[in-house]
Length: 256
Image (cartoon, rainbow, N blue to C red):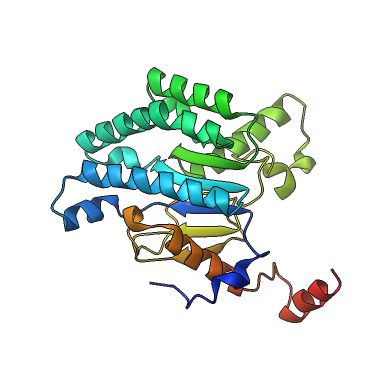
């Protein structure tokens, strides 16, 4: 586990990240520890999502991005994938109105064409319903992979070059950043991964270029407001230099 001792949560005030991304890991292990089928772990994980979204909105995060289903997750047992799709559709049916009532805008990123027509229609309806909300943006990454995202962006730029809308010399990191998923949202400031694993699993490779990483052994269904507070406190204790020296960062802060 990589987890610093968290300072007093009061020190986080004014230093919260704008965009937090979470790899929600540990549902199956949570269920196994309790002698339950894996589907119960996913249901418990869904409840953890509800709690965390409510708390994140109260913390005034601008964006919360959750890794719900990766492009590699199709390799899981067919029964588990079917159960996940069923839970996903059920959640869309039951939870979107609650998000809307609380002023939360819902977005989905990933290759959505890989899902059933019913799921695609449900996602489109949820996005349309919540589009004007401004309290917080909740992004759900489904059938998503960071390598897919970057390849998709490269394909879009190649098409623009082919059609004469973009010159080769215009292909820069800034231009690339306009073609990846969530191009209109701030970059990820803090990545949290639950469940004790210490890898990023092909998640938001471009968007997390300068993110702080926080790994915890807490299994996702047990991740709560206290756990998020700990992550935010550790984030606030770190100095983000973006290539500068510590002295330069301190000097810049003095001149603000």
